[in-house]
Image 1 (cartoon, one colour):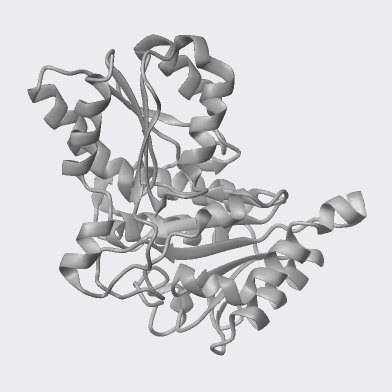
Image 2 (spheres, helix red, strand yellow):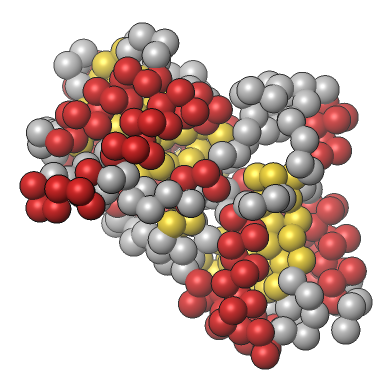
Length: 326
């Protein structure tokens, strides 16, 4: 199977869905001629024109609001937010409008909107361009949240998100864009709410998503050198979340560690931990462990940024401590 980058996989997904459905259009800052801040939409304006690949002002509230309105009258807009941090400027449109419209109006309204948000740290962009804010929207009923870690998942889940009749926040970690992986030329949509088992194991269940799934995969290899067998589950979809697969794994391993780049307090990891405690308490042989970013703003200083972020080394250390708590 051919290998392409995460960026190329996303571009393919967008192009194929735009070819399939004339109601799909793109809008965001510098997405037309420039191709977006990270090059995902490069070349699409040449194929689809300026009416379907639309540059917007630097005003997230206005163009996300416009996309919500367009979705209500039959279009399927895909918005690109240059950095996930800027989603705060459009939170009213997403949380108080897009998420609530179908609930309020029933069959009179649907909101098939995708918001692609570039999140995560690792490039020393500082506290306002490096955040992972997906937990905000996992907490909001009516919004689906997706965070793929591989090119194949990025393409398949993006196709599903565009076809969904609900608003979907599609989180893309900026460190994943150049990652390469196998992607079928004909890629089927991947259902939301179904996790992927990356590695089978017996001693410990590790749950992660986005870039932390990649770091956790490195940690699984290193743990194997310590004689330990870890099962790695990539969530892929945060809302809906595949709790059943996690519980099934924990019943086998007896231990759970959740890894995320978001801040530790009230994060996705806290939700996973609580759900597993509720549904599989009798199977746990040790306390649940979370590995997440420290609860401080993300620094632009390289050593400070690395100090607060999860890493393969921190995951391995935490896993060894967890297994030693029996």
